[in-house]
Image (cartoon, rainbow, N blue to C red; front, side, top):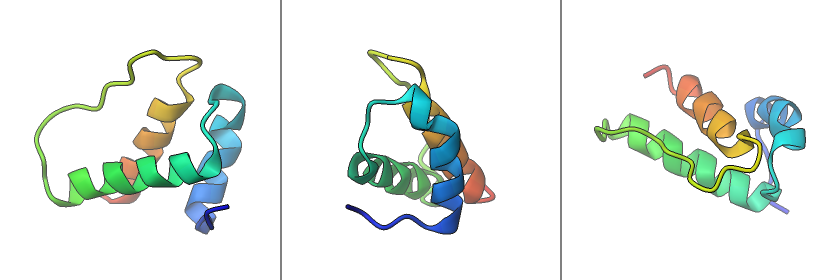
Length: 68
């Protein structure tokens, strides 16, 4: 299992009941979202095939954490 930061643990508590992604996939998604923000890649995040919106909420928390 992937190790979560304190910030990620807090975000995980909020999205756990809204996503079917396991922790390793969430951590990967977090890292990808943060990289996009830090590298100032233009565009928007879109979650296709949404179950309950947990992944996009997770990405929102990730990008908010960058302060960008």
